[in-house]
Image (tube, rainbow, N blue to C red; front, side, top):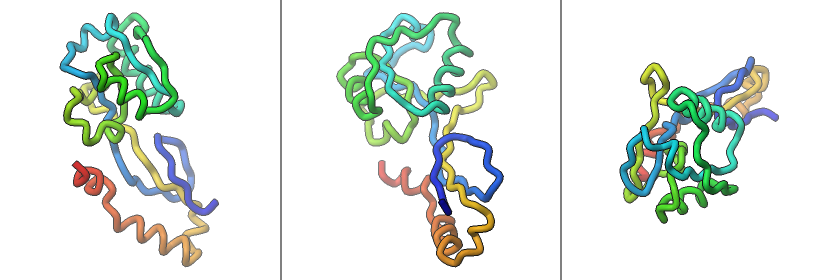
Length: 154
């Protein structure tokens, strides 16, 4: 493999470029009070270990009881649609809820009040950078501002 795209922060000894940064957000049909979350039904979805760890860490920093998971689905899109039908709230990356103005969205912060973000990286082997095709692709990717592209989709 010459180049890989990875969501989440992993140790990597080769070259890497940050492509995208997205916030972790609370999503619900209407505005809810964070203090009420332990009593409200949550909709969970299958996600990668790093994202699940981010969600679990935020929860444990804010609550001493487990969440009241009412439904668990296989995809974020299904979860988002269930939230849109007022079946519960979810904690999701901001990319999943782009263009959903009808839903209440609250970006989450960690215990130090910093936004909780997930990164998308391009990893590559440093030695492969000497290959013309690999170098050209990496330089092309450097010219693209994914953050602006996502913002313009709204």
